[in-house]
Length: 349
Image (cartoon, rainbow, N blue to C red; front, top):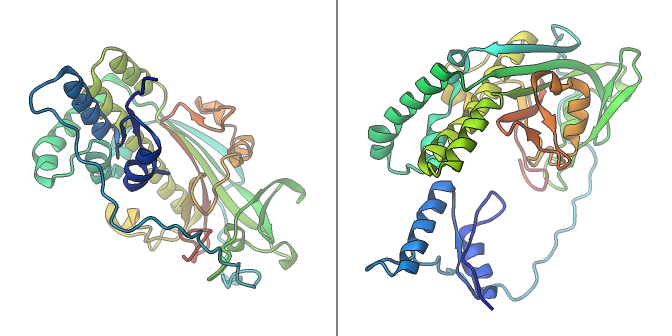
């Protein structure tokens, strides 16, 4: 039977797993691509080999450095213990309002300064060499940003708000105006170490106090996605990859920009770092958690956020697979507790 080349990538895969383990069980060519640009280079190499271009060859497979483990891994039992040691006497800041607000027409100039250019040039565009990124990548980025602004390709909008809440065990319970349960989120807890859980960063139900949590959904709209689709259909793959990568990072920049706005309105932005680098290292109070990451991995919780924020008002809809559309959209939970930070629910902080 005929076999076809397979190129795999994504956050759940590694080069070693694809080019060692999967390569052993598939009779055809299996390669790993860290990003779309590496995938494009692999496709060019595959086609050159197929056409018999002199000197054409695929890059070498990643070699196994350690012998394959034959014995099954031993599963560590969870350590005994209950709630984490997160403080319960921190001040609860007063939110500026309860409920939701919609903001549209946010100028590109407001959130473009929050663009993580390193992530874009090195990660999205594949420009690993600093000299190339500086000499070629940054001028192309400036030109592309000018085009996005000139043609109005980004239509930035936000829906955000604050909600009263309490915690109970691993659950964060969002309350209605009468103090009853409106919805609840159940988060994973570390099975060892500090036993952190997102619910711990909020006042317990039996404390007699009511806490607050902030939620946000941001989008740069559908026009930029429509333009990337047009470029792809026209076989303008480099232009497509560059604009698509920029659109992804612009959505992140908008999320960072509005996250800072939320912290400022909440009155917890006094210790924010001066520069973007410190912001990207989360050197502030008021951590932002995006769904799908270790502390809140359940994408089905997006339906609960959508029920609270009603993002269809800014043109964002949830698919049956719990993906946000347009693609260049993100959602998040913002927690005010000063100890809140990123942690792996399966291990140490």
